[in-house]
Amino acid sequence: ELEAVIFDLDGVITDSAEYHYLAWKQLCDELEIPFDRQFNNNLKGVGRMASLELLLARGTRSYSPEEKASFAARKNEYYKKLIARITPDDLLPGIDALLSALHEAGIRTALASASRNASAILGYLGISDRFDVVTDPGALKKGKPDPEQFFLAAELLGVPYRNCIGIEDAQAGIDAINAAGMLSVGIGGYLEGAALRLSSTAELSLERLREAFFRR
Ligand code: BG6
Ligand code: MG
Image 1 (spheres, rainbow, N blue to C red):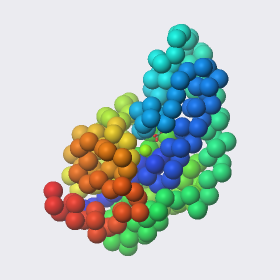
Image 2: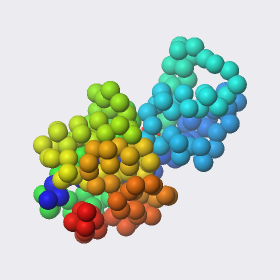
Image 3: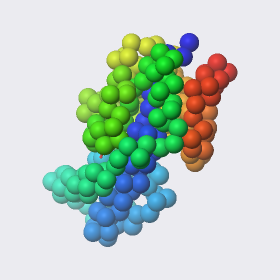
């Protein structure tokens, strides 16, 4: 029985993936490290320090832990300025209706975002009270593609893993959902191993989720 839906945030609830891209782009320009939207796909779902390491590996020199910490903090300052523009109008299509339908059907909801800015973004979107559980990425030992955050969400919801669906826009996220034994829904692009692939959140509906869940 389908009991819970666990959502990624960046690229699923709102298009903050673009703001991550712009903030990293500004830092990379300053450090003269090549960076484009295509490489940015590798950073989706990947935590802040791990993303920085992937970017610095493309440069020509190495940096001290202190320098790395200051680069990560600088990127986050750029990012925080960008996300402050987010309003309830920036909810991706279909999300508001899906959250309402899930609530009415008694299906529980959780957020499993790698972002330490997730709560702030939910606030800007005006949807802080619409998730039963918001997992804290600071409480995790391992990020996506490890399933830890999806396990944590299900445990906090009190729902068996197999009765959960996870929705993600990143390969690391789909891998994490599959590793957790949940049904994976991939949004946009080509996501390997996604049980259900949708080109946009506008195609999300409770009926589609139920159908994919029972087809499994
Ligand atoms: C994920 C994003 O949701 O959060 C990644 O997909 C990002 O791009 C990660 O690096 C960490 O976000 P933050 O806000 O803690 O730097
Ligand atoms: Mg994402």
